[in-house]
Image 1 (tube, rainbow, N blue to C red):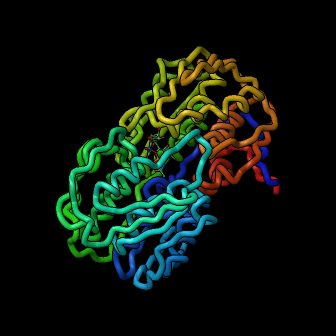
Image 2: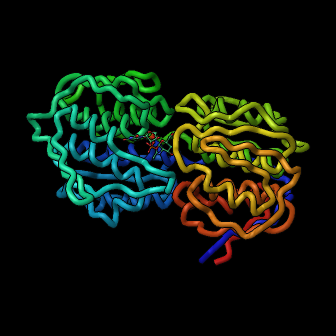
Image 3: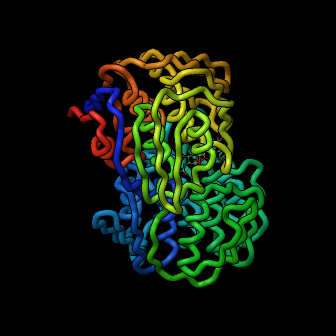
Length: 419
Ligand code: UD1
């Protein structure tokens, strides 16, 4: 089992280009199924979740080629609509293929998706919105059998009781294949949804409103292949910023819009970091320990992202002063806390609240990634800690970070992968 060995306490300095966003490239790759012909996707990160998505596309009959960060997908040869369990369990976002297959073929057969262990992650909203668009979905022995019978699919108003990112994206994709107007009311407003809209528009789709609670799609219009550049990954950016805050130093990130990270940047500033931003760059300087800040409450965008909760917590745990966290999106998103405690963190849990009392400096320990962002949080903690930390279960981290160790080394961190 490979692990990272990290010698903490080395200040970070230098510049880094942030890779493309995992959470927008996954639905964009699924959207490539909507047309015959060659789509070209630039800034496609090399992540295990992306490889799993490309495997699904190949299995369905697509031609997939990768050259560095450009991926070419040709879905002209699409000849299957069923995705076997071994591919579906790789990641939860594979459920996005339901909407894409339905739009293109009117039929899909999937098993229930896998993914990070963050407590119950139902897909009821995905299914109810697709049903509202006329899809007939049977749930049998862990499988989802979805028939749209092209003529029963019809654009309609669909309402989401919670702004689910995945359900919004699934509905947008399915709606492209439903004749008439679909209006998604209560849509999630995450920047990745705007990115998906931009790609769909590049394909000729008539989609508007992404980034607001109402997204509308005039479905059934002819689409064509497109060339598109995926936005920068705001959560990877948050990770590198928190790493520089925990270890101190001065870093500049490029390829990410600060507008997508307002809530995280406000916290880092309150904790004592100095930030300078440009249209697609963020520079952070941190000298001296981080201070405790006002309560960090995770919320749908533009609120504080749940994906950055563990990462910021790790940085503040090694600072000074107390900070209250409240996790409002997922039930089990404190699995990293026990591991941070092994490094000396003082964190009290009570339901959805976590009270973090900065201990001044964490210390090295052998710790285990519990999930994707929890694993990244341990790396952040280790960079600021005294002594050596071993972070194992790297498979979680590889789902969402390309070359995390190499990038941190380029900033002066002492981190290496032990095979
Ligand atoms: C996406 C992101 C993930 C991020 C999350 C919240 C991707 C690939 N993943 O996940 O990194 O942490 O948004 O910003 O984009 N829910 C239901 N029923 C459903 C669907 C969701 O009850 O059918 C609930 C979930 O349990 C959760 C909340 O809605 O409590 C938000 O989840 P959702 O926005 O759907 O997250 P994902 O799309 O899975």
